[in-house]
Length: 534
Image (cartoon, rainbow, N blue to C red; front, side, top):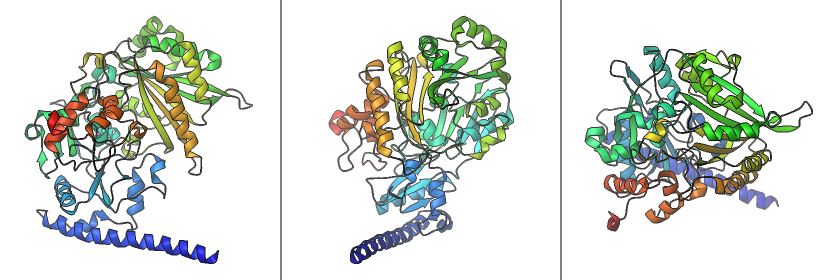
């Protein structure tokens, strides 16, 4: 018994020492290469972190949003590189190719499957963490802003509000989203029915390609510019900045949250929401957050459906619209909070009441959890009986979240092929299913199985051929690439068409043009289109 334990300890020590030696050797080679491929004598050792560095773990975990991918059993990078400017990234790409080191690129760490900082297949790998590239330049006269990809959407909103109270940007409500991955996948938010996605409002970009060149829209060409606005991150190069078009917002907007439990007729109200949510005035966005709650002091569980809304206007006009289109919710004047746009972003990010807009500069999630998520798109209302079945399933999970996000308005006017994000006309609402837990010791399989059970249950009621899903709600259950032989056909049939519909073929065509050797690869990156299909 003692001998057995001694052998195990010796093996663990050997593995740890081996990784340490490999990291040191790799670090030395990479530092020499970076210096040779840099125009200045910058001390790259100050931005390159190995596991033996005291800051390694804190940097790795700093923006890892899904705690599932922070556990000791999850593979860790050999090195973390935190560039300070674009030329550092150019050198990193050139050197990674020369030294055959796999790259993962992270801006905000919100990838649902951790692909921006975890590689289960490719070893060795390094993480290029772009958090220090966070410059924002707002030009109100031009109605535009340049934002580097390490900045969060919350920081962008705040910097816009410093210059104008009547300009905004239509991106996500969670305020800690890195602008790199967020816009790369589409970037939807509370103004999508008025102005479309964040990616619909990008007018220029900077990207470092597989050859280490820094390109803008003109030099990259329209095919690549099309692909990076909604084709998801990690496939075509490293985007370093976006030029976004600002949108007009009124000086007064209105927000509200009204919650209905099963005992208050939640099912029938939710059915009615499905019928009208995509047809409401495009100034009005009402999402539904469905969670469990305690119905009584004895702790009996029930379902709470919270109608969380932004209206681009005052409460008087909002109440007129609601009384005409959705009286079933029973919205009253005391439910409505009139504010300005920047404070509405604080409200919609679920910060506690009375937090000032400066909270958006904190670059943090209010709560970090372990979670597994999936998504769907609905083209027709779920029958009441189907809703009842879904709510019963939600009661089976301890900390579930199901969110219904309305489409319609501007989203129905934009062509499916305008950018790679294809979920447009005919979509009533998007659905997110998420199982959440707080303890690393919990049974992960139980929670993951719940999401798969709900996803299977919903199959008859959601989009078909393909069953559409949102790429920024990444789901590896749909399938993964094989590193040695990434198959366009397998990727298309498993996840490509679900994320991108018919745009998947054009994305693969662009990939073959700009990265034919598939250097920018991950488990669900776009594969190059085979030569015989071009």
